[in-house]
Length: 263
Image 1 (cartoon, rainbow, N blue to C red):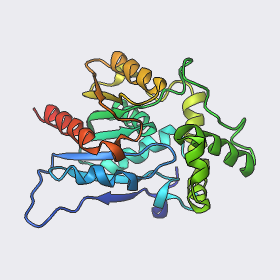
Image 2 (image 1 turned 45 degrees about the horizontal axis):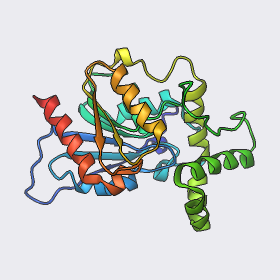
Image 3 (image 1 turned 90 degrees about the horizontal axis):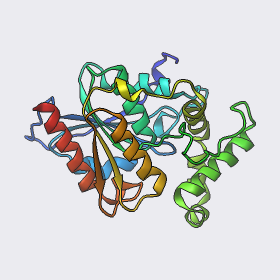
């Protein structure tokens, strides 16, 4: 990791209306998934007026994407999350691959991560997980990298929806291809796996939507079974983009876990 200021993740802290006081301990940090940014969680933030919300663009994504920066593996993203937490412990919401990062941080620094809501955190290192369309090597040319990232996006959102995106929107997604490939490569090929469930001692909610695909349902169930004391929760009618389509339900899970951690 580099230590130059320009490479630090860009943070967005919620601004509350005048006179609205939120206890300092009521804090949630939002970690977005692969090929995403913190901007997609604005609706969720609006549903949490009673909490201090910090969301940030992980390095390589959104406004934390800088020319010349090296892409980060899972460990690098965990280090960034711990720097975002600083000296103020928080509940962490990890969406999709952000859940992998949140769980790894919880195993590493339980004094900073009060609890984790992991929504459909993938397990691409598991033998049963469908093959991730990664390039054969991270040293491949940019064309091969972009083609792999496009295949990933077509699987994630559907071919028709991808084809209907304007070219600038497609370009914005593909600009994050190096970050996507590096973090997924480290999760798939790294040894050991990104986190050890036995080392996670903080409260964990493993959540999934009833309208999601089977791999995410299975991963949520496996996580709940592997982490001691974890709760398995489902959100009716939600698919993978729960923060856009069911933000109220996701906000409720965060509040419930925060209350449990405060008890």
